[in-house]
Every structure is written in structure tokens, then in C-alpha cells.
Image 1 (cartoon, rainbow, N blue to C red):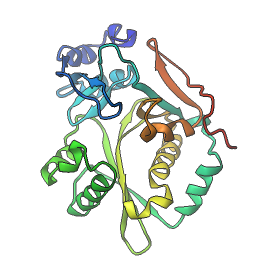
Image 2 (spheres, rainbow, N blue to C red; image 1 turned 180 degrees about the vertical axis):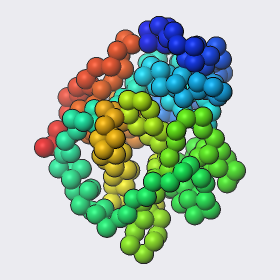
Image 3 (cartoon, rainbow, N blue to C red; image 1 turned 30 degrees about the horizontal axis):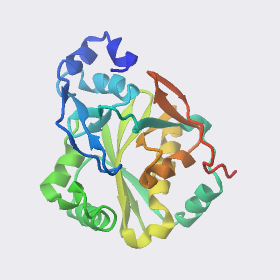
Length: 255
């Protein structure tokens, strides 16, 4: 495990770390021919939020009431990444996305699932990830994803002027930043760049709250689905137990 986790000495952090377990091998959804396994830690009970803060800094992500990170034998393709929000400067393409979505209204809500959200979530999954497990989720599964949390979680909705729900983003608040849990949008409005716009909104919100980072989960160099993350600069990656600048040749560097 990363040094950050091994050095955890707070009682609340240790409480969570006692419940570590590993999943059995499963086909990797990102790299063909690869097998994935995850290390899970329960974050329920007193001190769960404090424990998750430490785990997030060690590269873990949250789903429901557990934190997880890849633990795949012989593969380290999944790299935790975070945006240095206080130093973020949008590139040309991101400024275009901001202009394209100026007509939308963003509302931050408690994490409560609705039928309207679920319909949009289902359309998004069937369009973008039709062969994935999430495309088969029912409403109660979606409700669990949104509402089952042991940490400070919020749901962001983006609506058009006529009230139509265009996109939504579930995110957590950490001591040092915001963590994007999951976002989805109307696939018929893909030209708007709503996924990028949601991340830009989180970056601005982190700045308003004086939180230095926005955690974006994992980046895989060989996965086209995750290429967008490298466009948010400065981007840091967790390597050898330390967060370091991520530098890539060929990444979008437009001013």
C-alpha cells in the first residue's frame, strides 16, 4: 500500500483501514485482455469522513460507503490524478466549452435521487457504456449510488432555460478539495462538452471554497475514454506515494 496509508496514525483512519479486502479477478473494462482487482476499505461509522480524506490522498476512490483502488497484479496503468484548482488556467477548447454552456443554470443539491435524473442517467449509459454493468442499473441501484455516502456529498444539476435537465455530477467534499464521483449528461447534447463543463464548474467551486484540488479519479494512458483528464492543467498524479506534476508529450497545451 502507499506510504501515506501505512503512516496513518489517526484512530479514525485506522478504523477504516482494518476493513481492507480484495475483490476476485474480473475482466478489465478499460484495457482489453487485462484483469482487474480492487482493494476496498469500508468507511462507515464514526470517523469515516476523516478516514476517507486520508484514503483519497492515497489514491482511493469512493463508491457508496466504501473506498477502493486498483490492486491488479503486474499492472499499474490506473494512475490517480487531481487538478491543482487554484492554479488552473482553461485552454482554448475549455473556454469554448464555457461559452457554449453559458445558458445553463447550475444548482447544488443534497444527494437525493429523482426519476428525472435516472432517466437521463439511463440514456447516457445506453449511449456511452451500453455494454457495461452500469447500463443495467435499476432505479434502486441508482438511488444507492447517489444517496449511500458516509462523507459530505452533493449533487450538481445543470438545466437549460426551459428547465430541461442537461447534466448532473455527484461529488464529495474533502478537506483539501472536491472529488468527482460520477457525472452524466444528455447524449444528444454531446457537442456542448458537458462532461468537461462539469469538471470546470467543480474547479471553480473548489476555488470559491479555497480548496486546492479537484480529484478526477484514475487516468489510463492507453484509454481514449480518459484522455480528457490530461487537458486540465496543472494536473498531478500519485506516483511512489507522492503527488507529482503529470507531464505528457502530445497533451493539449492550447493557451
